[in-house]
Image 1 (cartoon, rainbow, N blue to C red):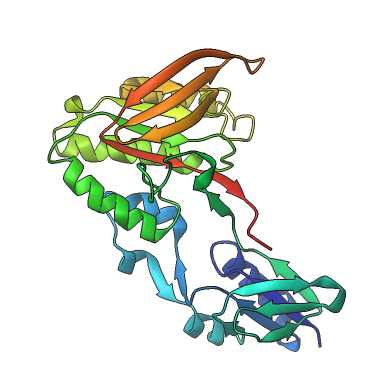
Image 2 (cartoon, helix red, strand yellow):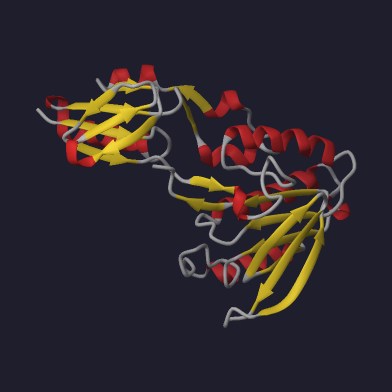
Length: 267
């Protein structure tokens, strides 16, 4: 009997655990290790940020569902992997031996890469439900006294879809509130063109997304590097295809959501 250990229990780790159990059957041991006892459905965070969903709608306790699949669960953070020993060291001192290891921790959110970026700075995030709830608090204040929005993804972000989605979600919510005309919106992205998505485009994503953004009066800046963020102002360097700066922008905002760079987790 093999022991398969999975580090991480979000949208990568949890399906991995279910798939391994389905493929291997009951003859092998599976253990999931996570730094939290709760699953959060990350794709719904943009909805939480405008009040269309709540934490209760998008989260649940992991252990009962894993137990139903005969999967062990340890809600303690992994601190170190010793690959030569096939062993995971946990933050509370436990050691877990494995035959096979799946690492599905997700990224480290590198807000520190840009001065003033992130929930501890001057912009919001939808990367976690905690971030989304903070954004919802700020959104409720914003719609009372609307103004410019800057939304997008900074350099070295590797998942651009949620930024586009959130731009369209904000547009829809503002139209429902009948205040869209009071909100200039600018999409700022490190992508070389709209619809690149970090994938070189998907089908005709460039044409489709450009058309939708024009229809919804969302301006954009591509090949952008966010150099710093201050209260109510974002500094953006726009580059050409050779990487040369062609224009410096100072973008005012009353509300901003920018996806950060992604890094590997500390190990």
